[in-house]
Every structure is written in structure tokens, then in C-alpha cells.
Length: 200
Ligand SMILES: [Zn+2]
Image 1 (cartoon, rainbow, N blue to C red):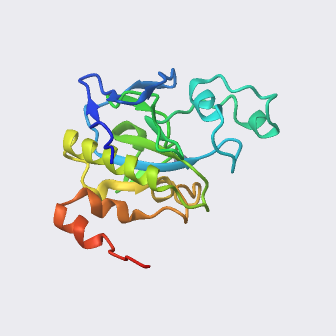
Image 2 (image 1 turned 90 degrees about the vertical axis):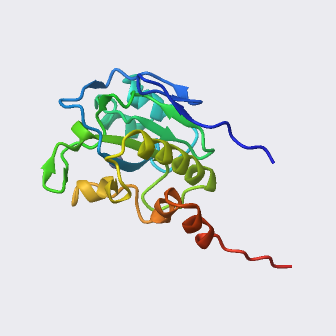
């Protein structure tokens, strides 16, 4: 069994190992606060996985002629800090020290403009499909590291885009299992959750 190398976070807010794809769609955070983790889902075109288009959207290079759907979105200036692809591949567009543009009009605990104080992680997927085991493994690894690096992100402050943009957004969707948060805690909680079904 091969284990993935441990994730590291450098002082500039970049993870490694990860594919770094610096996006121009970011700016300075208004305050030195990172206290919320927002989970999203995205696929481009919707329902299709594996293409280069999410990178291109976040980099501002999406070609509107490649798919009819792109005509309506190619001019958006949006980004997320990270994307976790179906394979578990981790891509980072914006360092955590900067503000990524993922939440839009949003509100958490009475506070608006969640981009100011949050980290946005996209999972490649749709609002109805299930996500892959590789994605949960990577999301768990990234979340563990972020909770350690930014102690004000507690499990209660890990939310979906649909939670902070109610009535406007539905991602990460009905296929997303929030149980991964339990795995961020103690080893005993993790063991308790593990099912031991050996069927012959
Ligand atoms: Zn979203």
C-alpha cells in the first residue's frame, strides 16, 4: 500500500504537493482573518468531468466558442482557492492568504461578504451526483491541514455554498456527504465510523 505524501502549507499560503495554477481573480483580504471553509461543486460544461475548462474559467481564459454553455460564463471573474478533481488531484489557484472570488453574495452568521474571511474549495461534480472516495480523501487531508493552520476554522464553520447563499446556490448538492467532517476529529471518532463488513 502506498501512502500519499503529506500535504504542506508554505508561509505564502500555497499547498504542496498540488498543481499550482495562479489565478488573476483574487485580491487582498480586508482583514487578517480566515475563519470559514466553504465547499462547492463545479463541472464544465455541467455534468462533464475531466476537461481543462474549470482551470480556464478560473484563469479567465475560457473560450466561449468551445461550448454553448461557456458563452454565458466566460466573462465571469471568479475563482476558488482549490479544486479537487474526480481523481483526487489537487489544484490550487489562489493562495489562502489572498481573497478568492467564490462565494458571491453571501451571509454566514449574520456576516456578509464571506469571501473576505473564507477559503473556497471546489469539488469537481454536480449538485446531484455522488463524489468519489479519492475526493473525500483529499478533502479530508486538506481540511485537516487548514484546521490546524487556521484554528478559527472549527468543524462548525465548514459549510456548503448553499448554506451561505440560500435560495441562490445549491452546491455542493445532495450527493455530498458531510460525514467527512467527523473524520477531522479524533482517531476514535474515525474508528467508530469505519464499517467492518467482510462479505464472502
Ligand atoms: Zn459554489
